[in-house]
Amino acid sequence: MPDATITKRKDFLSVLDFDATDLERCLRLSARLKADRALGRHASTADALGGRHVAMLFDKPSLRTRTTFEIAIRELGGHLVALQPDVALGRREPVADVARNLERWVDAVVIRTFSQSLLQEFATAATRLHVVNALTDQEHPCQAIADFLTLQERFGQLRGRTMAYVGDGNNVATSLAHAAAMLGVHVHVASPEPYQLPHAVVQQATNAARHGARLRLFSEAADAVAGADAVYTDTWTSMGKEDEAETRRQAFAAYQVNEELMSLAKPGALFMHCLPAHRGEEVTADVFESQVSVVFDQAENRLHGQKALLLMLLAPAASL
Ligand code: CP
Ligand code: NVA
Image (cartoon, rainbow, N blue to C red; front, side, top):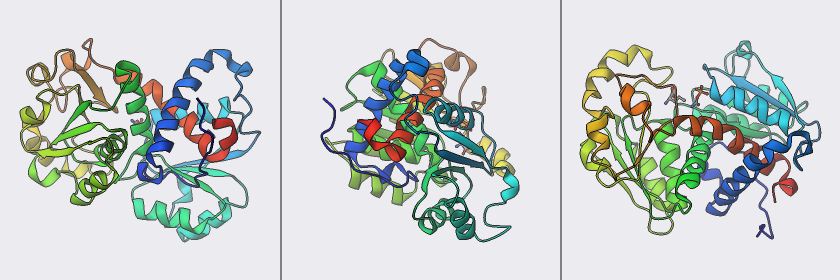
C-alpha cells in the first residue's frame, strides 16, 4: 500500500534527517526501483527529475558513490553537473557563498567532504537547495540505505535481527547505528577503546530506537559477533587518516573478521563491508570471497537506494 501522505525533506545529511517512516519508505521504493530498472526508459520514473540539475562535489576519492549517483541522476531524467575539487570548499571562498551560488543554478548538490559541520553550514546557507551527504568523516548515510536494502532482500523482515559491527567506530558505523535503531535492528559494536563509537552517536541511536532495538558496545570482537545475523566491518584507516595507518593496524589487529570469528555468529551469518576492503587487515580473503559475503550486493544497492533518495527529496510525488 503506498503511503497516503509524504513528508517533504530538504536535505539528507544524516540518517537522522529521516524519520522511521521515511526510512522504511525509502527501502520499499529502492526495492521497486531495482525491479523496474529492467524497464529502462519505460520505467515510470525515467523522467521523474524532468531535466533538473544535480551537482556533485567530491573532496575525497570515490568509486561506488560517485558512479552510482551519476547513473541514478541519469536514469531518473536529471542532469549531472560534476564540480571539480578546485572549488576547494571552504578555502577559496566561504562555504555559505558557494552554497548561495549553487542554489541559483541547480536543484540539489551531492557532497563528499571532511567535516559534517561544514556540510551543515552549506545546507543551512542555501534554503532552496537539497543537499545530500555522500560521506563525511562523521557519517555515511547513503551507505546505510544500501546496507539495509541488502539485509531486507536476504531476511525479509528486519525487525529483531542483530548486526555485529567489528572495527572502527567511524562514519559507516555511525550511520548503520542510526538506521538500525530506526528499523528495529539490534547492533553490537566491537572496537578497541580509543576507536569506539562516539557517546553522542550511542545517545542518538538510543533516542531513535524503535521496536526495542538495542545498541551495545563491546571490547571483544567475539562477544559482539555471538549470535549475530550479519557481521560488518570497514577499513581500519578511513580517508584522511592515512598518517595513523600503522598505529591503527596495531590497535585493530585483534578485530579482524576471519573464518574463526564468523564461526561464532549465527550459522550462515552474512558478511558485509562498504568497500573498499583491505584483505589481510580488517577481513581475510577467504571471508571476503565466501558464499556469505554480500559486499557486491551492497555496492549494487547503492544505486537503487540513491535513486529512491533523489526521488524522495526532488520528486516526492513520484516516490509514492
Ligand atoms: N562505499 C563507498 O562509499 O565507496 P566509495 O568510497 O568508492 O564511494
Ligand atoms: N570509513 C571509510 C568509508 C569509505 C567508503 C572512509 O571514510 O574512508
